[in-house]
Length: 549
Image 1 (cartoon, rainbow, N blue to C red):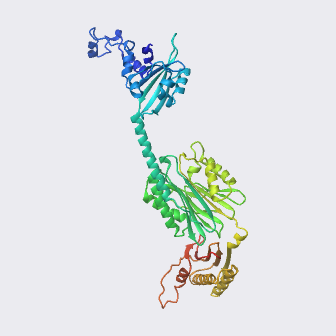
Image 2 (spheres, rainbow, N blue to C red; image 1 turned 90 degrees about the vertical axis):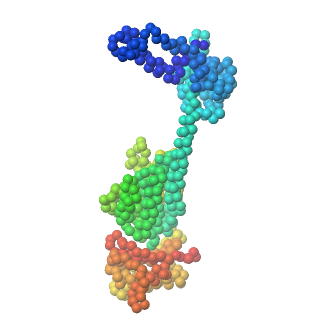
Image 3 (cartoon, one colour; image 1 turned 180 degrees about the vertical axis):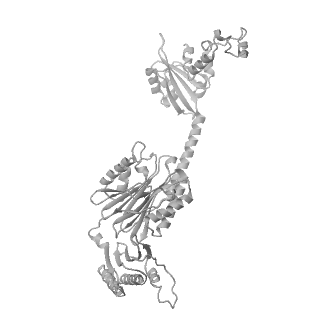
């Protein structure tokens, strides 16, 4: 076998030969001044001649190469040669044996089909970092060897030990997996473990982390019951990745819950969050939607800080897109946010989501939102079923390149027995002091018709009387008393035109006033007050219903 011909096909041989050719000094130019004198002086007749590659003892060279070298011939890939490094790695290999029998290590690595392919195509192929049964990792290069007149074609197998590189890469991947697991664990621990369950809404949510550490962290959602039958819903996305983004997200989510307890309008909540986001980290921004559902109004009032639009499907299947108003993301500062609203009556379904659900590198963002709208139009069932269908329709998988958060809420249309468990009654408070006894009589009649137990009936009438009396004394027209029952609680609410919020205080024995709110706070399960959008306030309290009610 002429090994010199095959040695020229070893990886890098041709490049080295070309480099030597470029730097070889031609005899006719040695004296033209283009070569330094010192170099020219070295090129004398006494200089020993460097042997050409063809004159080297190729077999001796291959035997000393630290890489693994094997030569196989014919369609059975019979062994023609293995060097010392190959023998040291896998043992003695008999010449003339077919590769399937004589080179079992190549068979286990799945390289025999590659040898067939190289032999047929006469093109070199490389397989990177294959781990052998002995635990070492090699990169294999298979190079075709041209057939001679009396010999069949062959393949030269050249394997470089890359165990150190492979182990370093595996350590890096393990570190990345550890960082990702830390980020995912932190992210999930900061999200609500169980969603609060409002009386009037059915809600489901899902969070899908991205497939890499760089795609984890920053998306969050929350559901906050505000009392008086109202519910706050929030979804956001910190513009960052990893543990830091998850930590910022946790701070913002905690702040949202604190601000929500103030029962402020959505745009005021975002205004407070904007300032806080700057204080947390001036280099990170976040998008967010904060929305409030009031079953008495049948609308979803919201404010958006650079977030994607809420989608609402009404009871007829038409999907509405709540685009405006939208301000810049949180953390940018200097922007006055505004609140908008979208209808959310009985039978409606709303979807809040982050950009991982609709944003793709090869697709415009509006196209992704339009596709989600079409999916929502055809998605029916419980909120969890709708949530899962939307995620599947968007093609979100375990190796998705961004994390995804989705929040689905439904305002169910109640019929039959359920409709009897959800009732409303309201009375406009007209006139002066005579409005108080009229309000008590109204409350007593309504609660009797709703068949409440005597104790609950009396507590509801007392609460209505105290709230109305407080409004008549400190508020301004227009005034209204509203009674509302759900399957879980009785809600008593009084609204008036004055925006001064009452507070609970301790009345002295000689005081003739100041006891109304204290009485309501004592007898009710919960109470609160808020300013209404058109000016004025609402003061409410609620009583938990017994299970038999």
